[in-house]
Every structure is written in C-alpha cells, then in structure tokens.
Image 1: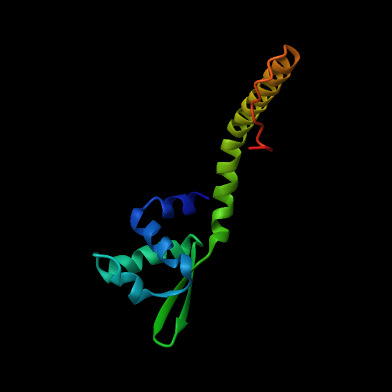
Image 2: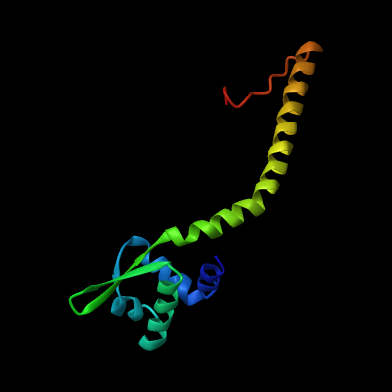
Length: 123
C-alpha cells in the first residue's frame, strides 16, 4: 500500500494514470502529452509498473502501458476504514433528521394544522 500511495503522490504519475483510463497507450504517445523529457516519463512509468498500477506489453517496437486498478484495492480499503466511522456519524445524523421531520408532520396533523409538507414520495 505504501508503494502505491508513493506512486500516486506525484502529479505527473497521476496524469499518466488518467491518460491510461481509456485503455492501453504507447509510451511515446504518453510522453508526447508532457513537457518533460522522455527519460523522465520512462522513470515515472517504471515507478507505476513497479507499484503494480500499470502493466506494459511490447507491441512490435512499441511498449504499451495499461492501467491496473487492482493495486489500488489495499489503499481503497484503508481509506474506507478511515471514513467508515465518519459515514456512520452522518448516517445517524440523517436518521435523526428524518425522525424529526416525521415527528413534526405528525404533530401538525394532530393539532389540526393541515399545512401539507410534501414528502419525498409525492414531490
């Protein structure tokens, strides 16, 4: 996970990953999209390959790179673990809000105030 996090920490490597979202791309075409040297792009591609974020294939004389998101699973699970409790706090707050809305509607109906507040099903 640390290797993946380090790999995506660099903005050039993140842009390379975004370039590969649509499918395999030749190394030369990747390099053409940047204003840094081809050797620098090659080093970035090596870091991405070693972290497991990309795979490369030799097609004729060109090396094609392809995104491999499976390496992100460990990082995604770690982030989900950090945000899980936060999500449950918001979930409880939304549940409390929903309860309050229904209680207010019930009290208005019981007190004879027929000022209808549309619920989400009729809206």
